[in-house]
Structures are given as structure tokens and as C-alpha cells.
Amino acid sequence: MAYSKDSVALKGISFQIEDGEFVFITGPSGAGKSSIIHLLTCENFASEGKLIVAGTNLKSLSHRQIAKYRRKIGVVFQDFRLIDGMNVYDNVAFAVRVVGRGGREVKERVNTALEIVGLTHKMYDSPKELSGGEQQRVALARAIVNSPEIIIADEPTGNVDPAMSIEIMKLLSSINKNGITVVVVTHEQRLVKAFKKREIRLREGLIEFDTEEDKHQILQVNEKEETNPDIPPRRRRAQRTHSEEDDV
Amino acid sequence: MIDRILFLIKSAFRSIFNNKLLTLGSIAVLTICLLTLGSSVLLFENVNLFIDQVGDESQVVIFIDENLGQEDINQIHQQLLKIQNIQDVHFESKERAMQNYLDSMGENSELFSDISSDVLRNSFIFNIKDLTKFDQTMFEISKIEGIARIRERRDVIERIRDISRIVLLLAITIITLLIIISAMIITNNVRTSVYARKEEIETMKYIGATDLFVQTPYLIEGIIIGIVAGLLTLVLTFFVYNEIISPIIADFGLFTPIAIKGKIIRFALFYIVSGAIIGMIGSATPVKNYVNV
Image (cartoon, rainbow over all chains, first blue to last red):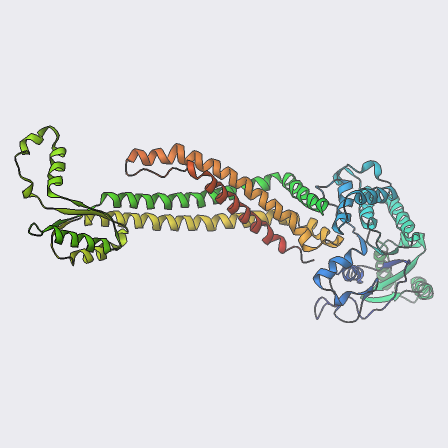
């Protein structure tokens, strides 16, 4: 995927995510994580190759079909993207109405979604009255309210405190246990280690590792370089800084 | 379906109340725009009325050669009736003219009572329909045989015509400029309002909303703003015209201004429909720029 001739974000990468899988996409800044989100949400399209999601080839979608495709996926953004003028209930209900449902079904679906994220008691509050963690849970309720096939979460814990981050990940994990595929883009290695799920790590538009074997090997190489007295301290420091950046 | 429509209407009202200041700004600008449009209509109607009334006063009188008999006079009458740009043609005999003259003398009429009506001529009196074709009409009349003299107030008519032309030209220029400025302000206002909700529109699109679903509340909002501005303009027009402009025109005594009381439905429809259309177009155009995500 390329934004321009000189700016290639993803360089011919290929991977497959199975139905019902939970996958972390990680990597340092500029690795191509956001580009993957843009492709999955049809904000951008691949300049070459194919991207098939839930049986749909995203490259061949018309403007109108994009709206229909987006109803199959639930997106969670780092900045929550809740509509300030609507209360919690309406923010979630809006997603149900968008797909053409109305009446009692809206109420039932919204109540169920809010129950899952534990916010039934705050359904008439404005998003501004909620903490970051609560706002992200509302966004999560909005993402799951139409029973999507896939949840795409873009740095879902980026704006919440560490304790709430764990809560958000637990919620995503429990949603995944109900058969929904979950793709989480994050740079928080702490969470990736804690949840022990498949990790696709990107670096400079390429896949650095995907399988557990590759991951192990690469981490070992990094560790060796770290302790090797032959590598000058300056290079070691540069490597450490780079590695720390990745874990921010 | 009804639930969906109600939701979209509710969304429009929510947006109006959440953006009170911008909404008020849009209503104010649209009201000014409609008021300008309405004033232009009233100005045009009044100028036309003024020209018509001046036309009524600028009668043309043609005096018939005293040697002609009744048959010739009838022939002149027939020829006059064939000219399209004249109306209300009526014959005034020299006896009738004398009587009118004596009547106009009032108490002094007795001083002239001995004068014979033979000193006067029979005449035809009529009005010109379209003053812009005055010269052409006079040329046609002059070709009729048996006319001794024509009395018309060409100079007065020409001056009035010039003034009317200048007034209309000025009015059109000022109104056109005001409409362009108002339209620009409205578009800018709505653009600001939509830009403030750019993220909201993008979020709606990411959830899977179609362009129409996103645009509809804005269209309804534009229509509501247009209707409110239309009603406000209606009240303002009636108040300003009836209480301020109409009395001023009447005080000058130039002509009787048109009465708008009987035209309330026409004006209401004009303002509300124009307001709704301008509001709808003004709201829909900037939203289009943000739905392509």
C-alpha cells in the first residue's frame, strides 16, 4: 500500500487471520499499523494486491458498498469518537439505526451491549461526564451492538489508565470468546505479553514476525546483541533506545 | 420506517439545540437574505404601480378638426381603437368639454357662461399602456387624418421614465449584491457549523452510515432554519412595510403604495419556500465535502 510514489507504507505483506481469532498487530511508529487499520476500514485502498475481509474483496467495493461492508465490522478508535451531543444510550443506538433497525430492537440491542460493557447505569449520561475508560467501553458497546463479524480496535488503550487498559482488553477477549474475530493494533507490549495471543509485528512496512517461532528467534537475537561486548556501547544505546520506543 | 424518519428529525433538532449560536447566526443571515429578496419584490411592485399611476395621469388628448362630421369622427375612433398601446379611449364633445371647464371654474363659472362651446374642439382622451413605447404610439396616432392637435406631457413622462429606470437599475444592483453577500455568508456559516461536526460525520460514516443517512438531518436542519427565517421575515416585512415604509410613501403623496395585507399567503409561501430551499442547499453543499470517507 502506497500513499505516493515515495511513501510506501506496507511493502507487499501477506497474512491471514482465521474466523474467531484474536490478533495483536504491533510495531514501532511508522511500521504500518495505522495503514492496516485504514485498509480494513476502507479509508484507503491497497495500491497493489488483494485484501479480503469477511469474504469481501475490499478493492472492488463501490462507495455505497463500503457503507454496507462497514456494518459487518465494529471499529474502536483510540480517541473513542463518541458524539458529544448524544448521551451514552443514543451513541450506541445510533449504530443500530444506521443499519436500518428501529423500535424495540434498538432498545434490546443497546441494553445488551451496555450490559456487556457494564455501563447500563450510565446510559443517560453524556460522554463528557465519563472517564476515558468508560468512554472506551461505550465505544466498545457501539462496536459490538450490531453483532459484527470482526472488531478492529485501533490503540484502544491509548487514552486510558493502565488498570482500565487491562479491563478493556479483558472485554475484547470475552467478546472474542463469543466467536467474534478481534484485531487489536497496539504498541503496548505489556498488554501483548499479558494476554498471550497471536502477534503480528511490523517494522518499516514489513512483517518482522508472525509465528511464535519467528518471534522467539528475533527476541533472542535482540537479547544477544544487547549483551554482546563486541558491539560498541554507542550502537547498543541506539538499539536500546529503539527497543524502548517500541514498547512505549 | 416511521421510527427512522422520527430519528432523523430528532437528530436535526438535536443538532439545532446543540449548536444554538451557529443556528441563530444562520437564521439571522437567512432572514436578512429573505428580507432583501422580499424588499426587492415589494420595490419592483411599487415602482411598477408608480409608473402605472403616473401613466393614468398622463392622459393624451387629441383634438379633432372642427370641419369634420360625425362619420369622420367615428372613423378616427375606430382607428384609435386599432392602436394596441392605448386604453380607455373615450370621446369628449366640445359641449362636454365646455361644461367641464365651467365646472372647474367653480363660483366664477358665470363669467364664462356666455361663451359658445364652438370655441372648443371635439376630442378623444385616452391613456398609454406601456410608456416605454410612447414615441412609437405617438407616431402611429400622428398618421391618423383629421387630428388638429395632440396634447401630451411627453417631457414629464420621459423624466418619470428615466427616474423609474434609474431606481430599478439601482435596486437591482443593490439587491443582487446583497443576495450574493448573504448567500456567501450563509454558505460560510454552514461550512463552519459542518466543520465543527466533521468528526461526528466521519464517525457516522465509519459506523456504516450511508451518505443520505448522514446528510438527511442536515437537510432537515436547513429546512427548519429556512422556515423559521421565513416566518421571521414575514413578520418583519409586514411590520416594517406597514408601519414605516408605507406611511412614508403615502406622506410624499407621490402614489398610493401597494397594500400587502391581502397578499399574506403569497408572501408567506414565498418566504417559507425560498427559506427552506436556500437553507437546504446551504446545508447540503458543505456536508457533501465530508461524507466521502
